[in-house]
Amino acid sequence: MKATWNGVTLAESDETVVVEGNHYFPPQSLNEEYFHPSDHQTTCPWKGVASYKSLLVDGQRNENAAWYYPEPKEAASEIKDHVAFWKGVDVTA
Image: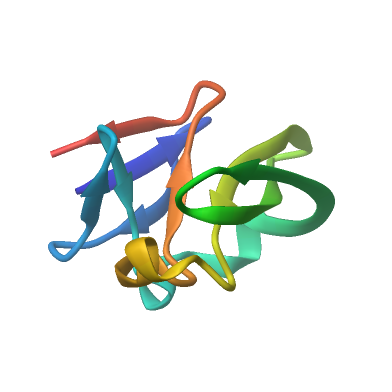
């Protein structure tokens, strides 16, 4: 699987974990240069608290376009620190 935005590859892996239709990419598959910390968080009743990262590509910013669970609940332990995308990021095979 490959995640792209604004013509760059954000992540690429053959070992994503699919949860609720979202591909979660392992941390080592990320091109970290495009990811920037965010203070934004949301809570999922069964996965726990999600943290977010914003993307910066060629001067364009996509706020909170990537999320991950640094301390997921036990039911979601397989996606610990894996990153999923939304907000216009293309995830394709």
